[in-house]
Structure formats: C-alpha cells, structure tokens
Image: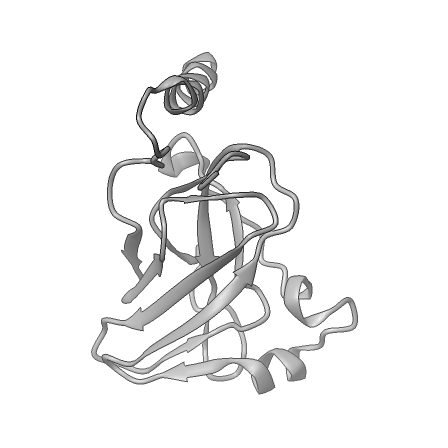
Length: 161
C-alpha cells in the first residue's frame, strides 16, 4: 500500500513542479476493452467538477445492453485484484429507481455501434480514476460481475490552468 501512496504522490507532484507550460496526465491509453466493450474518455486529465466525455463502443459480434443508470467514475485500483466496484443504479436514476426503470433506460448497442455521453464529475480528490460502464442482460440483470472500464485518467486541481 505504501508504494501506491508514493506512486500517486510522485505522479501528482512531479507535473506540478515541472517547468513545462502544460501539465499532462497519466501516460497510456484513454480506452480499455472488457466484456466486448471499449470505453474511452476524451482527455488524460480533468479538474474536479468537470464533465468527462465518454465513448462506449460495442466491439463484440453480439448486441450489448449498457446500463444508463450505473455509469460513474471511480478511483483506479492498485491492481486488478483490488477492482471490486459496487453496482449502484441510483447514481443517475435516483433513490427510487426500480428494475423496470433500469430496463427502460438501458441502451442497446449493436455490433460496431457506439454512444457518446457526458458524465459530470462531482467534487473529487486528486487521484487516478476510471469510468465504469455496467453491462446488462436484456431483462436488466447484470451481465458480468465487473463493469467495462475506460483507461486511466487523473483528476488534478490545476488541470488546464
């Protein structure tokens, strides 16, 4: 655990102390592919309370069903073993969300099709994050125990200043 703290501290302080004109976020892809779905964010770095543009594309040979209620950004784990996000459709559909509402709002994506949406970040601490997109069966049950995710991005208070 101490290594992550040192890594995060080094990764966040080094850009702030650099002499270059613009701070850059984490290196690597802004996209990730899991469960036949590619999820991408538009930038490597955001400020707290900013909107993230998310592209979700079906790269499988079958239709997928994307949950419009449970998409959110969460801190990126140290390792895939630590990746255990909780499914919570109330994030975007309210406290009174029912399975019927989840099914009514889910998005069917045919093979090769994609969607673009924005996710408004709330106040978030400085850290590395991923967007998670839950996939459902046609009747609204979770298709997988883990969501599809974007590549890693950073929330940094001084981004683009």
